[in-house]
Amino acid sequence: MVEVHTAAIIPPRGMTVGDPAAFVAAAFGGMAAPMFVMISGWGIHMSATRRFASGQMRVAEWISWLMPRVVMLALCQFLVNVLLNVDRGGRFEWHTPGVLTLLAIAALLAPVLVRLGMQTRVALMLLMVASPLVLGNASGPEWTWWERVASEGFSEWTARLLWNGTYPALPWLFFVLLGTLVYDLSENPEIRERNIAIGMAATIATIVIAVMEDMPWALTEGNAVLTFFPASSAFLIVSGTFALLAHRILEGGESTGGEPWREDRLSFLEPLGKITLTVYVAHFAVLGIIASMMQGEPRLELVPAFAATIGHTLIWIPLAILHQRYYPKVSLEELLRVFTSRA
Image (tube, rainbow, N blue to C red; front, side, top):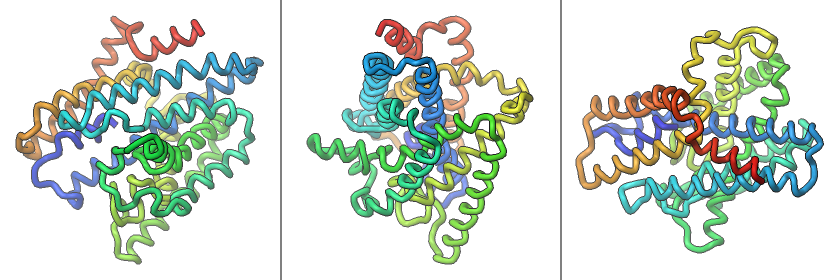
């Protein structure tokens, strides 16, 4: 997500949506958010399942677990919006709902989802897949980005949060539900592999449809089989399939007592995984400064823009390693643990 956010702030001069480099950048962005939400759903469901199994089922206990998470995610969303505010060359209004408010909704639903069987959650996922078709024009298929992040009054803000914002609950809870199934099927890689095969067949079908209808296969927004804003049904299926595939590849033989893919060669990424929320907020602080500096300035050429995007993406890996080595207690994740332990 760092890569696609950076590319959005410093797009190279002269590049169109049909450019191969633009397609690669969009592909990374299109996969980053589904993976982020799926893994977050997995983590929230794991925590809720453990609490449920330990007998912590009273309302007061659930509230003490939920509220710090919901408040933290909502405040971080507000902070992100302020850091990359439209008034300083950014992309958000200060009150724009986003991916963190989506995760706050997921946290609120965790006590309910943990009580639902797998078949019920699969049914809910199918409803999420169908929701773009049901919503129709209410999801704003013809809207520009600025219409999607703006709202006048509480009713419009609620609509952006639930069905026509950047990451609305409908249909993005699909990936949260997918994360809960990944957790429940952690010891059944065969079932996940079968679902991946079905998803790949559906992916091929979307490509065939795009060719037969002579329309783009994937666009961030506009008239295509796969669209990100708003998320189309085909996008949910295809990105969900590739999210499952990426998770399965990285898992390797770990679910059956073996080693993860590439064994410990990817262990250098573990520090980054421990502070994902902190990095998510912090990288917007950097982009906010860049956006402010670039107001009124011409776009960069391809090579400098590419170098800046990749550099800003990769720099967080060594920074996370240094952070975990010297300042592991200074993070939003640690602050959440403190609040939770005091609740």
